[in-house]
Structure formats: C-alpha cells, structure tokens
Image 1 (cartoon, rainbow, N blue to C red):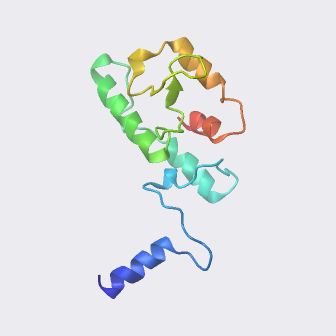
Image 2: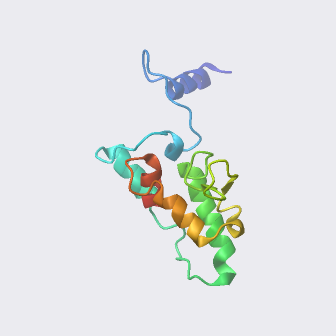
Length: 136
C-alpha cells in the first residue's frame, strides 16, 4: 500500500485524538440514534431521505409497482430503514414472540391492520423509528 493510500485511509477513519469515526456503508446509516434536525447534518439527512425516489413519480399502476418497490428498497438500505432494527421489520402478529419479517420483502404476509398496529407502536414517540417513518 503506498503512502498516499495510507494517508487517505487514516484521514477517512480517524478524526483526531480519541475520535474514532463510526463505520457506515452510507451516510444515512452512520447514526443509529435520534437525528438532531436542528443542525445542518440532520437537516441534510432529512432532505436527502425525503427526495423523490425517481424523476418520474410512481403512478400507482401495477405495471410500475416492481420498480417502485425496488426504489423503496434502495432508499431503505441507504438510510437504515431495512436494517434489522429498522422500521421495515414488523412482527407478523401482536404476540410478543411472533416472527419478525421485513414487510417490503414479505408484503403479502401482512394485513394492513397489522402494519398500522406496528406503526402506532412508535409513530408518536421521540425515537429514531418515528423519525424514519416520517422520512419514508
């Protein structure tokens, strides 16, 4: 490894004494906790997460449904919504030991009522899940 690459990698993963940078594959997954929307980084996160999925908006036509779901999946991966603790993981039933599935991957397994029940459990709470839901 040449010295330029070593210097570049050091600059990326080290931001000063005692300040290790958390590893993330995308900027949207760099923070697991609540996002501070009062700072520039939080406002930028919100802006990028809520931008249109495609230049041409989804018209709710079944012929375009597959592409829409793929676009949502990509956005979910960028912002951590599909991570194991993300908002896309929903218990199949209200039972505490219920199997937990990704509702985008397994959307046919859920009733709309079950999705609503799950969303109500966090939607008005001061949590990252509530923030992510709003951005979605």
